[in-house]
Length: 248
Image (spheres, one colour):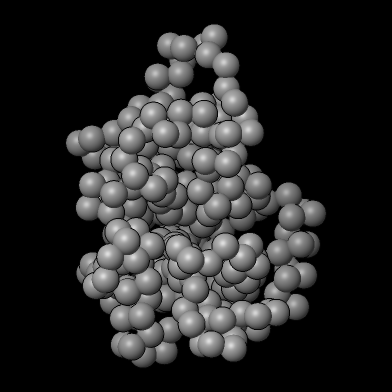
């Protein structure tokens, strides 16, 4: 079990009671929907919840939830399997870890928050022996035109290996890979692409992560999301050293 991790102004820990989960649900509601209330679903009771608090105020500034799976045979029980056909990943033999509902308080812009939660994730991955980290990386809103440069970069450089590539399952998707194959002469603004990329997804990609070839339109959370996977063995050694140094 991940121990309490203190870094700078922030503390990361695993939830310990129902109130912790309720606080995470309230933050998710604000981050995803911009309203009061609690974002909740049946997966909350099956998951571990990672919370990042500001030390001085004890304010919750970031959270995510983790669902450990023994191997690919259990992939159909994941949250992501509601939206993607993950049959190819059933062949994955090692332990897997689904990371979901990742969000940061909309009023907090400090990049150290992301660093702290990734340090906590690194600690948990090392302790659990997980060999693949996966989940849904969300873009705010459901208008694909807002993110065309970002989707172009994902198509060019970051599609999943064919052996793991998720298939379409959701009713409403944007098949960006096939879209850009038909527009091979399109010029991509790479600076704009990275600015429009969600912070979680940028971090996945820096570590060697990959994505599905389509985005799912999720009207319930008002997001577009792509399935995102990261094989732990594929993380560049220099990046692994940085992550583990952040834990120490």
